[in-house]
Length: 257
Ligand code: 13P
Image 1: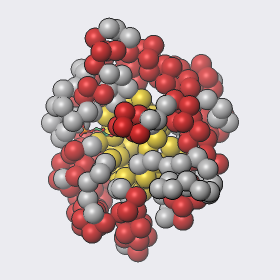
Image 2 (image 1 turned 90 degrees about the vertical axis):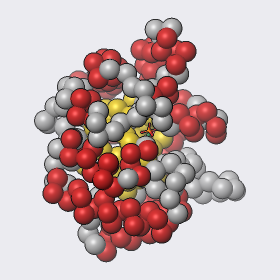
Image 3 (image 1 turned 90 degrees about the horizontal axis):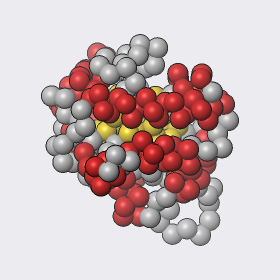
Image 4 (image 1 turned 60 degrees about the vertical axis):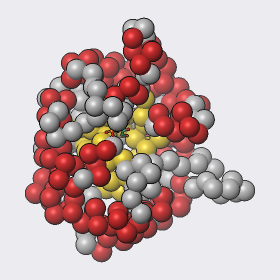
């Protein structure tokens, strides 16, 4: 992990935790990570219904924890039943928003084009997207990972300003590694992370490539986190299951510090 980029460990809580359960989890996480919070950007991404409570706890207790949503719609407002606009997230002090998670792509029809619309909308409102990419097992086994992920990045991150590009956060999450206990080797994950960085460099120039943060996601646990974090192009992790246990999440945060 390169020292000039601040490591980030973000917890994607997916469709787990009620608002009350989430509040308890944040409290526990904070107790365990406060000693390294100045060295690692720690972010939690509860479901929409948990954002208000999480935001209030973070604000009232002045916790050094970032707050993220798991999705957003690109319009500012309108007749879009069930959708959440960026400015609604701004009001809840969300600094981040996951976009293009493979579960959104699989179950909710997300495409590279809709990912891009969301990325641009979030930037218009000052929220940093955490843009997910990653290949299926079939694509991996066919040796097509680089081509597939490069296209996701080119299309998903199109149209940024140079300043926006310099703050890019990408999470590389091979679909076959999510929730399965299987992972690529750290070297393989780093190869993809380096390719993502090079793609950002080709689109927006070397400064963006150097400052962009690339996280690894997919079965990250306390036991394997340090191996991924020791790779030069991996700047942290987007954590699913292990983010729901304060102790495991804290161990991963400490591995990044
Ligand atoms: P797991 O850590 O449960 O494999 O999930 C990874 C993920 O999808 C994070 O966004």
